[in-house]
Length: 267
Ligand code: S5P
Image 1: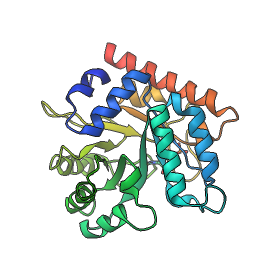
Image 2: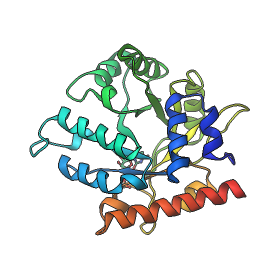
Image 3: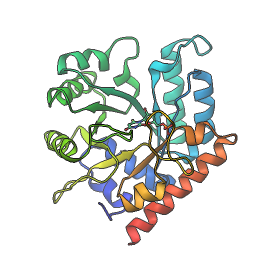
């Protein structure tokens, strides 16, 4: 696990998006990614405008939005989302979990109705298909001439998932094949790092109170995942979006995540 500060890692991270992310985390003092798993587009935008100062990343599942209310077009929504990211200095992560062969993910990432590569700085992919998935996604970013980064799913938060252990180790090997595009992992712990390597680990399954959701989700506290397990960014969905005062809750998670990080680098 890294005892280096986000600031120092921002200067040396091999991916451009990683450098941007680590530097804005240090500047805003936040390692909180809010997962806006909400089906109403306007509600997502107003929530992000309100919690923007507390977050480093906004994570979306664009395919859960029916676009039946205003904003009623995907392009209008993604333009407004990008404007909020600029305004509050956070990055956009579309949690698409790509899982197909290189040629298919190219079409899914670069086109379709969502055009994910055009507006999401970060996306993620399963390692099951092999390195072709990384190459396919990277080609899209190159062809569009945009700076993008990928997180590989090495271990999930849900009960009984097949990740972690050997699977995570093999995913890490795959990530090593492209350190300029793969910026890190979705995992529950820091990954084994060789001299000169730096992986950003973003961790879902974080809640300050609950232990699970009855559908397999398992939660840990910010302190457990950041200080004890060495993860870098906490991903919080229902812990924030389900709260009455979402702005106050986001600040509570930001503080908890930041304190855990400060303890880790001081230890
Ligand atoms: O292992 C994982 C990976 C992801 S990206 N476990 C997860 O829960 N996620 C996502 O994180 C999931 O799709 C959801 O959007 C979010 C967790 O939401 P919460 O409401 O349980 O905090």
